[in-house]
Image (cartoon, rainbow, N blue to C red; front, side, top):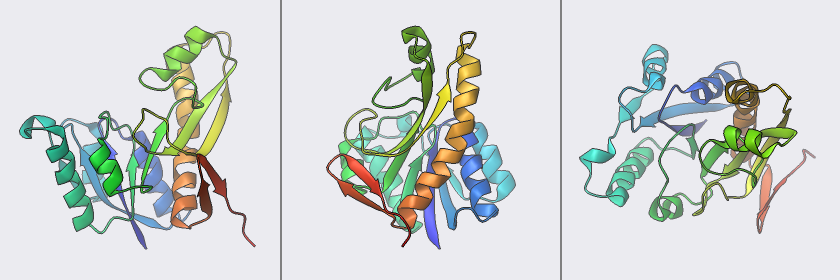
Length: 203
């Protein structure tokens, strides 16, 4: 069974959704390690309750960013991880880490990329006045939310939506999108051609 490492900074709702998919058989994988940069992240409580191995690594304990991510990478390799998932991990990943695990790092973003990258994507969407929003799961590359796209799901933007209401609607789609994208990659049912991730159909 393939091992996953999940990097988190906050409440861990996508971690929970991913773990539930492994428990009910939708996803044949094991969350072998959770890494957080935040010792107070609610996600860590969930890990403790579910018996998921987790470690906290604070950036302030390291001289520079590459050393911090080298330590994360060493821990990931120690747990024989096949795929890394960024699930609300609020740090930009450096090029050294990306190259070490090229095409083995997934991220999820609450917009239909390439629209509204970066922080506060839901606020950006509402301020721009779009009628459709959603979420995107993609391979991490050196840019900010610019990697090849694996899965996208869409939600309607209503006239009376607030940032919180829209965020909750998108989050429901995130929970499905993430495990589905992980399954595609772990099953090897894809091919990367330039920027495009082609999903291969079952024969």
